[in-house]
Amino acid sequence: MIVSLWRVPVGELPSWPLPPGIRPWVVRRRATLATFWVDYRPGGDLAYREFLVALAVRQGHRLTAGCVAAWVDDERSLAGGRALWGIPKELGTITVRTDSRGALGELTAPGVPAVRLTYRDVLRLPFRLPARGHLVQQLSDGSRCRVPLRITGRPALGRGRVTPGPGAPLSVLGRHRPLLSAALRDFRGVVGGPADSGHA
Image (cartoon, rainbow, N blue to C red; front, top):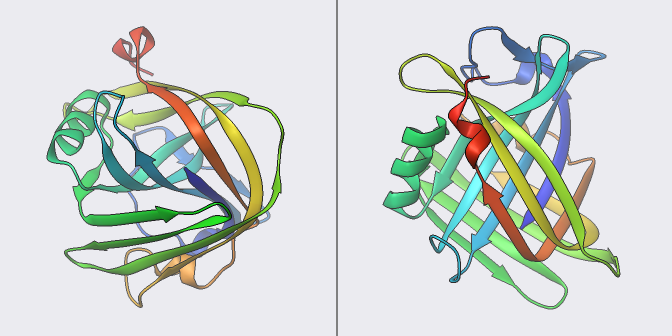
């Protein structure tokens, strides 16, 4: 998993739909985005690759996140993500190639100019890092769904660049550099669980 964190002018955000009552978290007229390139390898429920964009949002006084765009290369992941959690997955062709120092990635999909990733490690940390969070998504019936996330892996800090082709919907990433990028190797993750049956 390669993660990059971005701060972009709120006026440059695409018109991504958000659930009612959810709004972008804005500080000094900038919103916060995170991009994820993920290679889910055999051993879990499904093996596939994903490129996902999450937006930091406010739900009342709470700070959380919502997935605003995602592409996968597996139809089962697409159907499950949409039906179970309201994650707006689309089909694409995704490559994530890794070596001992970094990674290269590429997304191609209908209507989306090619998006490319370059990443190199700078500092590897000598421990496994656990993390928890959740997404707030809107289901097809209009209700909100809280999607728990639990993950652990071996982290490294690095330098990353995500380069989209010209045009919507991801050109905002081409106009800015990420604040930071990191890799999470040998990661284990769980999406959803008993808590996702309730509405947010």
